[in-house]
Amino acid sequence: MGMELRRSLLVGVVLVVVVVSGEAQLRPNFYQFTCPKVESIVRQAVLKKVRQTFVTVPATLRLFFHDCFVEGCDASVLIASPRGDAEKDAPDNLSLAGDGFDTVIKAKQAVEARCPGVVSCADVLAIAARDVVVLSGGPSFTVELGRRDGLISQARRVAGHLPGPDFNLNILANLFRMNNLTTHDMIALSGAHTVGFSHCSRFAKRLYAFGPSSPVDPSFNLPYAQLLMRACPRDVGPTIAVNMDPFTPTVFDNVYYRNLLKGEGLFTSDQVLFSNLLSRPVVKKFAADQSSFFRAFAASMVKLGRVGVKTGHQGEIRKDCTAFN
Ligand code: HEM
Image 1 (cartoon, protein in one colour):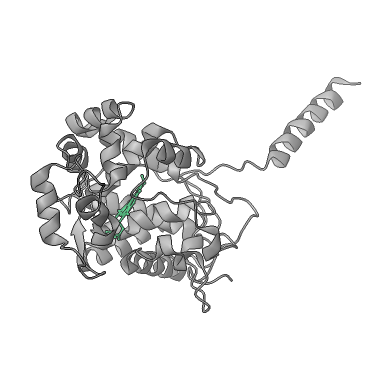
Image 2 (cartoon, rainbow, N blue to C red; image 1 turned 180 degrees about the vertical axis):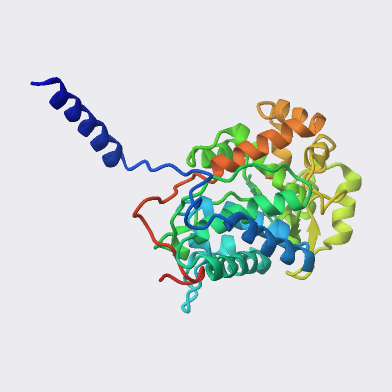
């Protein structure tokens, strides 16, 4: 066999391996030629929305997380079904705030006006999630792009994929591991609870019905528990919500971790990060050093953005983020 032939055979084999493995990678400059301004278009739309209401910040960040953990980061959570059986209609998603959806829908419309049919809703959501972190004082990072929008969005496929506020460290760690995220990623991403709200029902048990020996969860610091009881009396209405970080609720900072050190974590799933000796050192590090939290959060957001992504010819580029094409 001549040298040339052997070389071209080798190239052929390498190509086949790359194509068959289908591992098309996300990359930051994916829209370099097809929509070079996409990031500034999204940023403008997000900024406008944040100026109207701060709720945009936590709502968009949480929306990204809930999207990625169910079917991967593919905008499946945005689909609206006339029958009320889409992903967003699942019980775990009913408390997603409307302003997150509105942000992505508006940003996508602005993108469509400039580059029709090119940029996925999944990528718009990923960029918007980064932008709201930056706009509230958190770290910036480069968003990888090239996701395609998913073709499945079903309420019944949600259960078991999202963490609950009563989960312990083991269950939390397993759930994140299923998504290729480490316990360290989980601790860093939980820092998102430095912004936003929770409805009283999500932690009422820790205040009024913890256990037979004490109705109040003893891992709460008492003044904090009393503050929560005033904000959330027994049988309070289902729409009442409290700031998850009582001190700097509109700033993306490391106060979430400092609160955990004082017994001021709102959910069991927050406080457990400090009470469990395996995760405590990381909580202490983030509490003491905001820049180490920021670096870890940024890196974990990039990893979160890779969960279950569709690339290449998979999925589609939705025109309207709330409907399949
Ligand atoms: C570690 C496991 C987690 C659990 C158990 C959890 C649970 C919750 C719960 C119960 C709420 C309150 C919802 C409500 O009552 O309206 C909430 C809010 C929120 N979560 Fe998480 N979460 C977790 C991780 C994350 C992650 C990884 C992110 C993003 C990176 C995130 C971002 C948010 C945000 C921003 C809010 C506030 C939403 C708003 O104000 O609209 N959470 N979370």
